[in-house]
Image: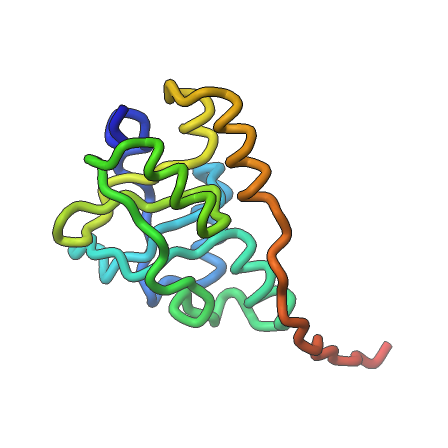
Length: 157
């Protein structure tokens, strides 16, 4: 089965100059957890992705103003991608290897054509449930993270 058969086509996108607030509202409105970041509204070349987690960690927890923080300051550049022609099992292997649950789908020009989520694979593919369960365990395995100090700002009461 090909990725193009089960992916979400025409995902909502943002661009580097989109505010974090606008991106959060797009995520909320579409009930999704990731937005592809494209060059501009007229050029669908994929530059990166921004997730609800990115906004939480790199904007809210960092004390930045979401209305004045642009997506290029908090997006993940060069995300792992797949092609619509790839086999779904290959896309699942990518998700496992990179511990991600969603993968942008791009064409030969690196333009966004869809998004493939782990739930798409579970609900729509013909991959064996044992393989899916093992992949899910690997995707969710905690990755070692270098701890960085959290800056805290004390506010006068």
